[in-house]
Image (cartoon, rainbow, N blue to C red; front, side, top):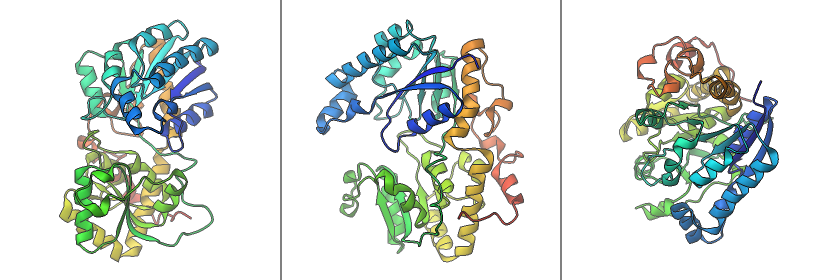
Length: 385
């Protein structure tokens, strides 16, 4: 391994996937120094945090740009890995080249999404040596705009945290749960389930925007309570962000990894990963959501079998952040040192051919590695303990 010293820059707050990626890099034997960017928007004044994200001219943004330069100068890394570098000035990126061989960027959001705060990042995109994103639309758009130094990376779960609670089978405290931020379609889905007589508990940011006053009291779920809340639900919902143009999201992997039944919006990605009615249940509209929720609430044995297959699938094909780092660091290193892009098929694992260049999953649902083919061959999958 040629590149060993990494300065990782990103928010390290509890529950952040950045911490999972850092642990994955460390597990590879890399020397990883960490600069936590959580203080960027940690003011107790909500208006100041909002101003930071809109202007990047507040003291915290300026201080963070100074901090990354100081840290890079002191640790002299081979690679500076910046996660969600929406606050990094182009002048800072140019100066970082004095201290590191390479500067790379990783993000799990949509840099062109409505309401995103990536305008400053877009100004400096050409200064990075490599871009990694979980958003396939961004791969296609950036490639179309002339950037060849980009490939898609996997979204995942934390292999040390998103696990079935050990040593016990939790009683079901909830029928259905949804943990996620407010978007209008999420409210419509939850409303449809409640109108059909089902009990749905909701946690997440920005539910004060809801039209229905009954949802406005919903608050974010604390990190220590996340796993037990998901594990104690008969069904956990996964709605995809229209703002981020998601076709899968963190919950797509965290819920099955914890061992809970996943009821998610239908996409080709979800179908490739789990299969509809095999390792998850997928819906296309409100009526189908209600029908499938009623069906799986009523038939416990079927619900447990689907949840078990989804859990086994997460582990068997390697969908954790640690698995992704193990596969993707080799691709990063090869691109930075040799300029070689991922090889179709071989380097796309555990996903479909063309995944790294932003191809959709639609054409690969009958491939040998798709859940609709593979998971049917799993005899009596063990239930998570």
